[in-house]
Length: 360
Ligand SMILES: NC(=O)c1ccc[n+]([C@@H]2O[C@H](COP(=O)([O-])OP(=O)(O)OC[C@H]3O[C@@H](n4cnc5c(N)ncnc54)[C@H](OP(=O)(O)O)[C@@H]3O)[C@@H](O)[C@H]2O)c1
Image (cartoon, rainbow, N blue to C red):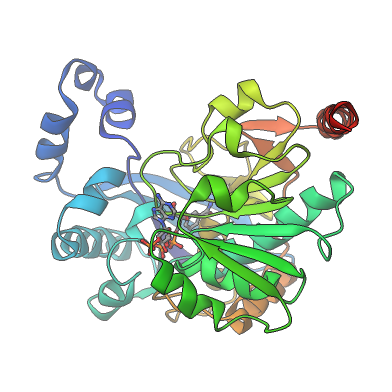
């Protein structure tokens, strides 16, 4: 039996903490966050029933790091590392030989490098498989809407980040026109120089301007609040939102029935998996980053895998091949936490076509 752990954390102090401790609903957010800085990591649940196509089985644990998204972005990285390292230790005490860093535990500071140096077990951010599923998900979505990625305008939001940079690299070998979007144009310029020179690349720090003409958008910023509003989006486009918390405003679900917004990285796990914890996904499915941790455990590859801010296309290809070997697959489409059927997608396509006809 192979063994892994995965770290989760509350996205919002008020909403997520109140689910476990209802009193939190009546307390100021800043007070809850202050209390959290004194809290030790917690055991959340056992994960059972992961079984590879090869017959290898794995079990794991969810462990909770008691800091919320905003705290990871405002407290010192050193403080956050200390809490995350303690949480890894808890996973190790529960038998894990590799630990995945969920949500902002992988974003903070150097993206897992310091945590790996100070842990006894292997560490991965899960970002290589997240990249693989973001590319496949956005390409599948484009196909559903009848878009040819080669001739499409592609935009990557958060393009200087760990996930965004490699998404841009891969798309620069597929599409002719790419816009790189981020807060810091100098960092985007560095990424631009790493991409296929045959691709036309523009950079901007203005999200609205960057996605206005895009047919395919992969959005993967570390923004704490949503950054893509309904008015920014081109009719008939597909947006793959990989960020957690999400980049696309929930208003888009209500106001734009002519665009396809899909969640990045919803993966069907092989076997009869029970997480014994509801993280908002349908049964037997997991985030891509959780899946990467399980894949490495099933492979018995107990070594640091996706670490730091400079991941490679080779690692993405390696984990994609291992995912296929063990039976992990992208699980259809989800949009704003709801499954999308083929009929739903057809309706979006028809709305977009009729809107485009009216413009002509
Ligand atoms: N769905 C999944 O399975 C999964 C797995 C792993 C991670 N994630 C999520 O993916 C996201 C990114 O992770 P990462 O490791 O790539 O983070 P990262 O390395 O910190 O990169 C994030 C990038 O976002 C940019 N950014 C931040 N705020 C922005 C804003 N307001 N407008 C435009 N760009 C902005 C940053 O730009 P600057 O550098 O210029 O400031 C940075 O380059 C996080 O939300 C994380 O939770 C999801």
